[in-house]
Amino acid sequence: MVICVYLPHFELTVAAGGRAETAQQALSGAALAIAPGPGAQARVGQVSGVAEALGVIPGMALGEALARCPELRLVPADPLGAARAWEGAARALEGIGAALELPRAGLAYFESDGLRGLHGGDEGVIDAARRALRRPVRVGAGPTRFCALAAALESRPRRPLVLRAGPEASRYLASRAIDLLGYRAETAALVEPLRRLGVLTLGELAALGRDAVADRFGEPGSIARRLARGEDTPLRARLLDERLEESLELWEAGSGLALERVLGVLVDRLLARPERRGRTLRALRLSARLVEGGTWSERVVLREALSDPLRMRLALSTRLGLLPAPATVLRLAAERFGPPQGEQGALRLDSPDDAPGARAARRARLREAVGQVRAAAGPDAALRALCVDPDSRVPERRVVLTPFAG
Image 1 (cartoon, helix red, strand yellow):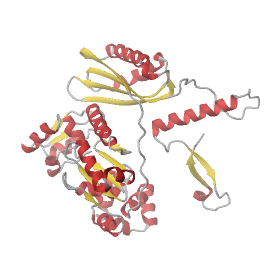
Image 2: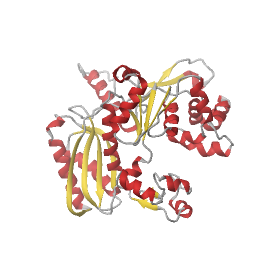
Image 3: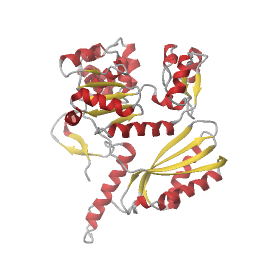
Image 4: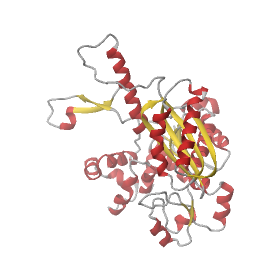
């Protein structure tokens, strides 16, 4: 069984100053929303329950949100604080033995199958998760992550909702609104088109023909229909990577050359950490606390795993121009490590005059390149074409895509 742990408005709660401050503003009837980030399209982030009741939804254009709710209060985004708070919550859940899948801050899934004996059944696992977080949390359980999410959204902080596999879960999903698809990145864009077509519940979506849905909406439509029918993919638990971080406080709000010098100091300190053990760095996170309030964060995946401070500064300095305001604190963290040596060489495997061992070395470099691509774009970023039925008249049956193993 899959258990879903859901903390509503988690990023907004952190940005507003914590649960106590958010609760006080909610009791006073304040409508809150996370202020838009820098960019041409100014759209609000997470919104409070009062703002939702007045017609403001996450992702709405700022002008439309203010037109619907003139008293809307904009809170500066704090992605760094939200990431740290959610990492602490995730570590607490992992402390009970859960292998977590974390799609976004405030939402986690894990399997209860291996934990029943440790905590005394599914109810014991749910109680252990609630005790570990030490805060009001919505918990739902079901045969798939989508069913568990539907149950968590309808549950109450002290009353978890458990859906058993079979007709119970199917009937429950069929009665849910189509808005539930908005919690999945692959299907979020389908909510509005389906509403315009008059499809308002998951049961109505499941009753549509497979070919008709795929022809109209493509792969996202097929995924949405499978979710509505109670089908879902297995969980993908995160890998616990070691994380190193260095930070430096600026005595005055820093920008321009001052920030570049600070960045150079952070790179040197990070490379000098003994915990690095000579490994190269593949993915970094550059973050800052802004002088006007809030934080800024940017993930940088290096094209090649590096340990050269000069090349790392060149790769990171271009991201400093994305800062929306002067910074008071600058942080640099290593999120993914590479092998001890990260020199880029030729990847061609069919050279006729190979030296002994050169072919194996190039295959190792190719595997390293595939690992870098997957670190930047996800596990499905590197695929290879496998010929299955070359004589078929249907192009989709001739070749299929399968993960590239190097």
